Length: 209
Image 1 (cartoon, rainbow, N blue to C red):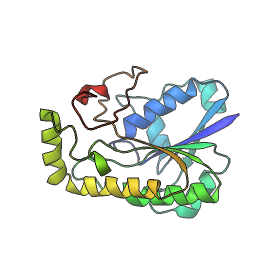
Image 2 (image 1 turned 45 degrees about the vertical axis):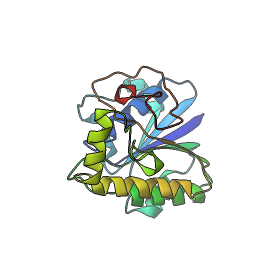
Image 3 (image 1 turned 30 degrees about the horizontal axis):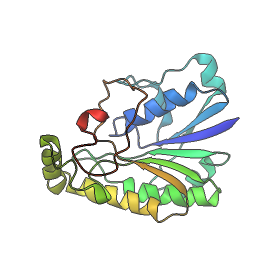
């Protein structure tokens, strides 16, 4: 039985709904169990939200594990929580104004814990506009607006995203960094994707996520 860990900051964080989609999809897979790691994992599972965790009582007992860890602070506990995990999906953090900026330090702790547990595969959620994708979608009004926000109101989020990506890219992990343009919780997953090879209008727009 394979096991993945999905890491959250907590209910109400910017990436919480993304992580719940990951959990729901993973729970549908045969031979796969999910370990949710968050400061309050019960909150992630039980609180009603736009994207609830969809699981039967039977599967809750056999396919879902909960581990309480403050990912940005408790490094030893995080390492222990990753014991026996085959891959990690990092949805820890947010880019909303007024929220604590923990993605950089969280990613550094996650990378360190994975290396100590000899876990190779990491998928981490970042954002369009991070790293070399800035300025995002310069051909569109959405990209122009988001660039302004990343230079002003959420400037700290852009810096935090860059720290996250740097921690992952400088590791020796087998990693995938996903930079969605925006994931609206009310939209259901389509099961499709498109690889954006260049920051040009011939690729994707804000509706892709």
